[in-house]
Length: 606
Image (tube, rainbow, N blue to C red; front, side, top):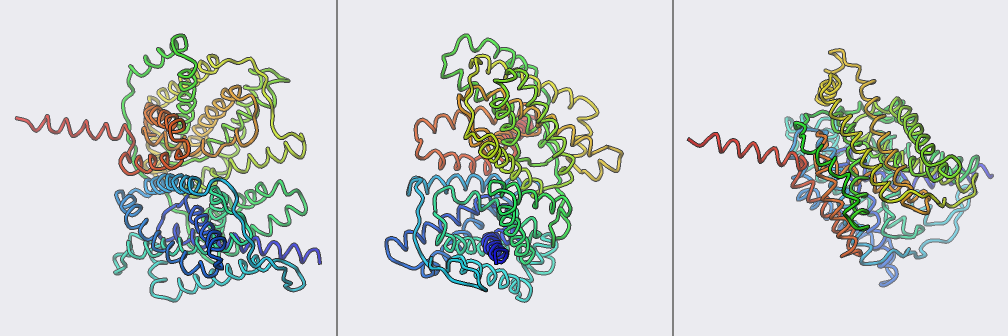
């Protein structure tokens, strides 16, 4: 009977994940939008159910008839007037992946910020269908049973609609080959909009049902977006029944992992299952072949004055106040992170979201080992851990591409954070670590400056060597690079390890700034996203590009956090959207375009 209880519990958890993932499967499988704000639509629907129940005494099932059409129409408008114009401006699949990632990340910030301003950070919960019921001898609440049934019905309904309806056949054609679909009379924009809007409506259904037994707050969506991404990737992008099976596998793994091992290792368990499936079959259990990315790079000659400016920064701490020194430390930290990230991701076109993982490893290693070993010895250990871990991750994952690599690295930081949290609570029996180090802000500044100088010099030397030419070839077409004799595996791995080492050292150097360290500080996921945004804003394919992205965004973030702290998330999200829409190739790309136009006008004059 106990085994049956856990089997049913696993089915319920899997049903929840399946319900969440159905809509995202449509959005990415057909519309090819990697929607990181998907969970925020779920969160807003949960609030609609809560306020409808609390203020108007409306059943969530009644709220469905308002919230679901509203979500459909809102998602339709979002796709037609925001995302489609953005994504259709380039034919490069890799560039479209990046644009969808960054634009929906900005939207995530905006929606979270609006919810926080309107309703605060308090959890909102209500009771609906919470009475116990018995199914095949196993007890559960009626609201969880309803969610399980809804997941099964919707998954089968979407599958049948895709397989047998005219619209479904058009959607499957677009998912299979979007470039060939117009040749047989399929309106790709129209059907992609329908798929994206239907995904938003299904997210609303999931949010309404989840709110009956899960408290709603502005940050609710992030965790469920991650679960949905894992389920969609495991099941195969665009494969609805594959996603259903993957969701139940994940639910069972979590449930029995909590029973046999520890509840604190649930995230590690489901990420381990996800990793095994993804590395075994990168296209998912039921999916087709993974799509390869491509594209060209924009490069700029290295400027001597930038190195002179870097050298001039050595004298800065003597002439600035504590506030400006602190601001410069933040600029140098993100310069190291963004340049380290771009060192690998810029030429290879692999979008990594693992910056917070390596930054956290560096920070937490200092917090644990600096006192018994000494600061410099602990920093050396952190560097060693970063190198070994990045080499292992690189060997295992660098054959992945596009969304698969993005999702894997996105989950990596969550996995490491959960493992460290479990170790601290269960083994070390600590909630965090106090740091009693005599490292001053001026010393941190010089260490970060030296780290930035290191990655700049390594980048310049690399670009002037055969390795730089090999990376350009790899970024343009990896298949061609292999065919002309370039060892692409070793090239990617070496570049990835150097990138990870820089990010790990940045975390270790920054650790003494905090007198107290815990996993939420060390492994803050925003570090990953801000690193990517800053690198792409300036231009990720030039050594000087990330600096141009870091400086304005750090200044904007600092200004917003002081002047409009309540609206910080909203304004920052709008800034991200502005960057993606109006500076798509980064500041260096913008400068290059203006320079070309100016030269063309000059040459045209008689």
